[in-house]
Amino acid sequence: MRNADLVARDLKSVWHPCTQMKDHQTLPLIPIKRGEGVWLEDFENNRYIDAVSSWWVNLFGHANPRINAAIQEQIGQLEHVILAGFSHEPVVNLSERLIEITPEGLNKCFYADNGSSAIEAALKMSYHYWRNMGKAGKKNFVNLSNSYHGETLGALALGDVSLYKDTYEPLLMEVITAPSPDTFNKEPGESDEDYALRQFEAMEAILAEQHEEICAVVVEPLIQCAGGMRMHHPIYHTKLREACDRYGVHLIADEIAVGFGRTGTLFACEQSDISPDFMCLSKGLTAGYLPLSVVLTTDNVYDAFYDDYETMRAFLHSHSYTGNPIGCAVALATLDIFRDDNVVENNRQLAACMAESVAHLADHPHVGDIRQHGMTLAIEMVKDRDTRTLFPWQERRGLRVYQHALTRQALLRPLGNVVYFMPPYVITEEQIRHLAQVATEGIEIAVRD
Image (cartoon, rainbow, N blue to C red):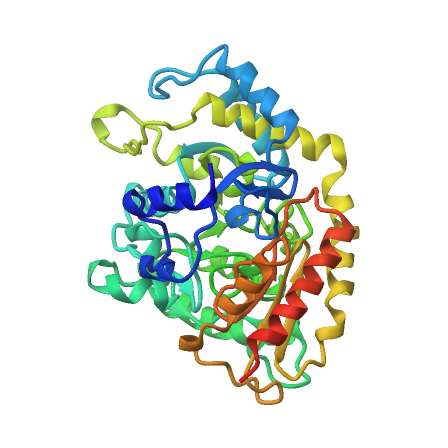
């Protein structure tokens, strides 16, 4: 089969996500035949380094033999069973393992299908908890500006990226938005920590004034991924945990994209030394293989729902494939690799290589910021470096980087004007340096008038 054969069939039948389909009149669709390690290969033997981990999910490479073996073994035993009234060994094993490695106090696991579904469940749990506790007036949520938490209606309401949200605004619940501690906006000479503390003052004021009507604050710790990979200092979440405790408000940590080693620690919350009331996990949970998500929460939350059936205090929320055994088996294999291969420690060397490989861009006249937390690095193209004036989004400068990268064996998919690396952890230093060279070339092409 040629690439063009599958593309022609695709464009007659498939509506692709997050895509203006008319673009594909001029922008070639890339059909992938197979993957191995960091490489994706099309039907004409062209190869691409998956620098974005196929939308931030792939941790240990495509067609990983250990994960493949786990799937094959589980399929021979049990493919799926209803999780209401039934259980199975993979979901129990996975729950025990997650409780062991996540922040202290997260002792109960509730499963869903994907990241947005996990956020939806956490929102409902928080609201329902307060209702069960006799505080039905708590029905609002607080988010951060420039945040993103998914695209189902509840999760979308908690976001603040206009590209995704504005069209559907009439369908969404209203939320309270606090200013982000995003360090791109700090004053010259101001430290990341000082800026985070200054920005927290607004959050403190919101909680002080409105805590009686607030269920929870929802945050994506350290990196606002879909918001352009904007980053902030962990002190913000340390202070937020203290304030949530003080005012009687839940803290929901969305670690769907930033968990499982992306920020330099296994979970981003570790860098703030906090335990949230709810932690949402997905993406890397199954290393890019299968949809699975989980909401971890506390005994205190769980106990608020534990009662006789007639009281109607139970959490009556479900998905057909909740706790799927094959997905759980994949997640267990993923955790085995973290345990056996010293992944987080090894990533530190790869992260240092990423930083060194793009250091030459720090003084580029059209690079406004290079930022990094662990295995996530972002380079923001700007019209003017001194004033940090942004390029108009309509010019689609990032698209030029994407198109160039495809000619140089790389899948780079910028977020607007932000070029970023979020590769599988099996990438080599040589491959990282290649990506840096490709990104440098792409930026030079993109910023030309």
